[in-house]
View: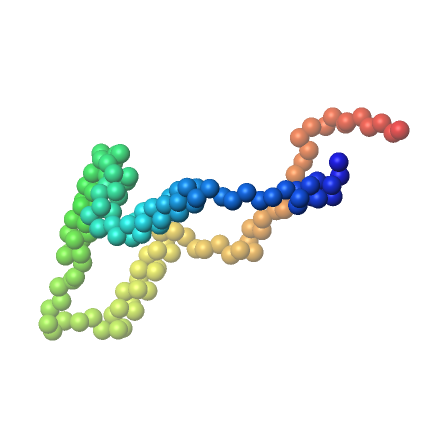
Amino acid sequence: MSTNDFEKRLQQQPLRPIPSHWRDEILGAASGECAARANLGDRKLSSVLILLWRELIHPCPVAWSGMVGLWLMLWAVNAHLRSGDEPELNSGQTASESQRIQSFKEARGVLVELTGPLEEPGDNPARHTRPKPHTQLATPTRNC
């Protein structure tokens, strides 16, 4: 039987009507799905927060409490360090520019004494050599 014969037989068969109760079931299921999707947008903030609590924080409360403690400790240290950063200047005493430049030159001189002079890049060029073979065994080759 070829496909043309099959198509001819199919065209000769009468179409049966779709049962009406099927239509009602399909439309009812589709409308229920639409209503369920519309309710997702109406969630309150509290339900979203509860869902977030269940999914993220509840499975590992010890880790989260440790993270909170660490952040609080870092915040306290940062606040303590910031309060001591501002130097106290007397109202009549300010360092002039020449004194600042001189102190920077002295600090640079001390740093050069401690670390030594910088090496120029041309003094010690890096050698680029080919990697040596790991073995001296020759592999036999066959010619066919």
